[in-house]
Image (tube, rainbow, N blue to C red; front, side, top):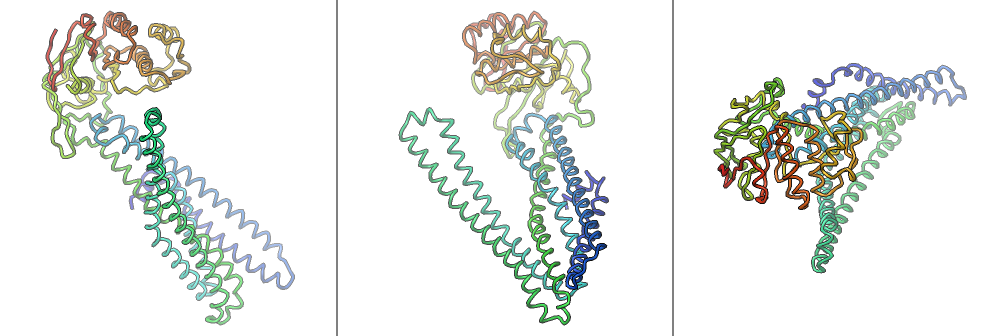
Length: 545
């Protein structure tokens, strides 16, 4: 079983102790029942044994201590396992390439990192409880069999039937739960359309009527399915409860007819049967969760393999050093693509769009513009130039020498890139203790000093317009101060005034600092700012200046 193998491999430290505590808990439970039986007999004669009272207190203390140790240890071990799995996934995501991430899909990645790890986190403590209850049942069975084999057979027979009924109906209940989740999702999708498209909805009565009608139908469907689900749950719960009470009735009314001498142990046997009800109910609840945990763990392991294998990556980065082999310490004077080719492929591996061969050189202290229409391959070229995607063929060069696979991460560490689909984090990751004077100077140059501050290594806010958020991305790039800076349509969301600032102040300043400056742009008004211009068309590149 995958879950058991993972637990033995990842968190074996406390298994012996947990096993011992489970056995101790079961023994103490059986002892507790025996003491109650003896006290009941003594109570009939009007006497009370101080020794039995003291022993009962000790058993309660032992049970409480063992139970606490089991739960706390299981919780700690479970969270340690989840932490280990998450760190492995984080590292696998960090080291994979953009093609793999896009093929997998961000939704699938987030589902594994959030949903499946949550399932494991919720299930592992329950497994510890289920294990404890199972051991407890073993000792209760021994105790009840010692009192009356017939009573033991009856009690555990009905218990097995109750568990079988619950498990048999679980699949139907799971289908209802999934239908409920789907119906609720449809309602929230409509709500999202209503709130995010509020302006469009208010501008059209037919559109508003159609959306509200669809939301009403979705809500009615959700209501119907929820009623079915809860009705089924209530019916099943009531039936199982009735079966457990039937067990008690059998112990009191039926077993005495079938077993001679049973009247002498009817009370302790009935009490033992009552103790059995709880563990059986717990196990019947926990057991199906094992399948959920197995599926979640299978998803996590499969995702880790997909991230690490890179079967579609011709230039795979080695796993032994994480791509940390250093490049020469000198600042690069040129980076280049030499005959680079890359193809996007569909699910069956057939190419659907190709770029290349791409050959272009970018030099320190120079500004290079890349132009071209939508879909011409400009952003793909930047992704290849930043080594985010592996080349199908050709080479990526630094100062005329190919960048070897084990040095790809060191190469990327020399580049600041603001892509058209950039993500701005509020925290300045990787820039510890930025100089406040330098930060203020950059904010003033980008005309953001009255809107944002940097406090404790984070922006005070990123709830800004698209153009202003791009300026904050530029703040991060300027603070990182890397020798190469790539800007993909950075000026597209700036107002006319700040476009002037960008082309006539910021870019010349970066050039004067000796950086390799690469800009994807359509602003032909400022083409004279560039030292070189490349034009992309249908995946091919041409130097036009």
